[in-house]
Length: 368
Image (tube, rainbow, N blue to C red; front, side):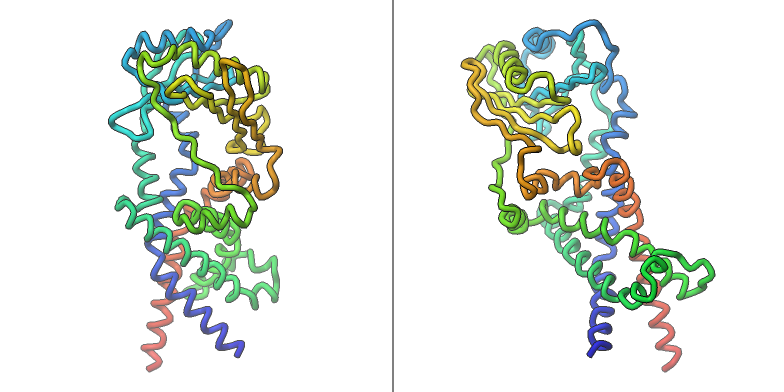
């Protein structure tokens, strides 16, 4: 019975691996590229992300007024600021080219519009490969199915490796440098697999969050957390409200309820001068996606809603950290680097697995 089970898991691991190898390799390599998107863009666009520190930043009302003088037809959808004196501000405006809008970087000391970010389109292209294989909803479903298969591949791989692990847990993490031929391929496949198991399981289980609505809803239900409504940026009609005053009042309200104890804040601009909605991060957040939400009525200084990441339940914190877990950034730079290396290694499992299969098949033919 035990041998039959072992054989079943071997076949499951083999055939699902061969079936999903190409897709998960593409997803892995594209994910590796996306791992350091923010860092690469900042490095290549230093003159847009960083500004020369001056005595004092312009008041938000003045900054918005100066921006609209330079872009009189702009419909501001979001405003993102940073407390770092060297960082620029970001204004997102409505655009016919992109549903998400166009991001414009601004010097907070002078209101100067900074150079356009270069390289963003490349990463959008890579993200489209990573999530949809460039073929829309069909590609999204293929990626989702392949990730489900990857989970089964990893779990079956663990079962297959149990005898090896029992013989020596720590030894199963070491590579046999003296091995040759098929033994060398197996050593590479099995040993490297031991190192990447936690990364692949975390990346797969969190990645399905964006692939399937049923999975997304199930996660919220299991965590005991109400599924939040997505905050959609709105266009602010020109002349409909006193936009500089509205945005200036909103950030004054943010300072009133939060003080100066935040690192970054993003305002979703109201289209009718109504309540203002913010997401912001603390000065020392648990991770870069540990965000708080604030909703206020600036004109009356009335607090509508204030939800802090640190006040959430364990389930709430996990659901708010899905992206950070997926990228590894939940565990800081070590987790990010580990996820990058694991994603980069994905094609190696497909190659070694295929070679092991071909060598085994060749041996069977020779025996016959």
